[in-house]
Image (cartoon, rainbow, N blue to C red; front, side, top):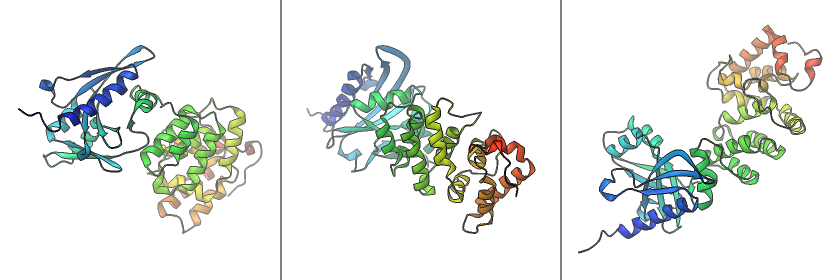
Length: 330
């Protein structure tokens, strides 16, 4: 009698994950093969010996057939997609690469929901990149994955978060920004990196979260970062006040519609639109410059019209000290 040829490979992956989870102090509960219909194990989260009311499920794959140099592949039947999308527990798919001796994870609930609406009724293969942030290893399980599962920002150093911010891979870039804003926003180095990234990255390598973060640093009554030390804020504001038509047009391009009324995405960036006495001229310059996209020019024109109709209200958004003097008229 022979065992399944892939059984030992499967066990290497499961045991690798079990060791990481248990070394972090969490509870790893393997599912009996008799009842394996889409979950190989579940994990109860424990932090500093405190058991959280949070349990997740794992589906684990192991072997070279599930990995490439920069990518992992997770096969799934239509029944699996339905199961993961609707199950009470969040399901993470974990793929173990035996050559690297490293595992990578993906959110199977979210991926299944995306594919259910588009699938043809058959199975699929969920492919995902091997990224800096989705390694399932000893350090990142505790510092990144567990905090994320508990709704908290990952525990990452300032330097590493800045490196992630500058990653060409968008999910890594976005997580780096989120960590800088949540964990390191009281550091000037964080704001220097965020503003440099906003200036340097092309439009298709940015999301609206970056200009929103800068607007929150500038000061916004609804969503502002009010705990930034004044010395840090002053230096960071000075960097943003140096923005010209190029940077403001880039931020406008990230606003999907022309809605700037509260509580829209555009309103979240109001400090950017009116932060300096030069703002009306910057908006006029964008509006009149044929090199900018037509939609961006129309948004600039709309904001400029709003300023002309209610210049006093716009004083509220000034961050250059000119609210104590007369603003130029256009």
